[in-house]
Amino acid sequence: MFPAAETITNGDGQVRRFSDERGVEWVASVAAEQGGDYKGRYYLILHRPEAEDEEPVALTDVRWNSPKTAERTMNTMSSLELRRRLRSARGRARAGAIA
Image (cartoon, rainbow, N blue to C red; front, side, top):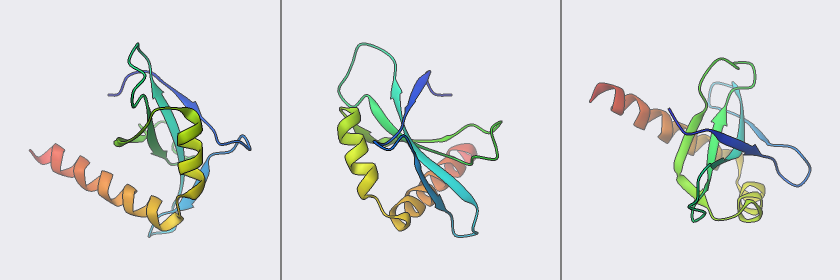
């Protein structure tokens, strides 16, 4: 479980939408850890919009120091890059469940 986080949208008020290799729609957005440490506070999260009861996939290794930097990076990430990061996060989650 991750600490409470706020979701941050890009400048248009939208988050990035993409489809995985099976055609399932995902949303990429940015969350912020609460607390006093602001370095690397913002991180990438992925979730399926129709699965509100599922925990988002948090990619805490993809971090930014400010919402502006996160927004700029999110706007330049391709769908291919987002799919790759989703596959990687899923693989790590499965490996952690086995260990």
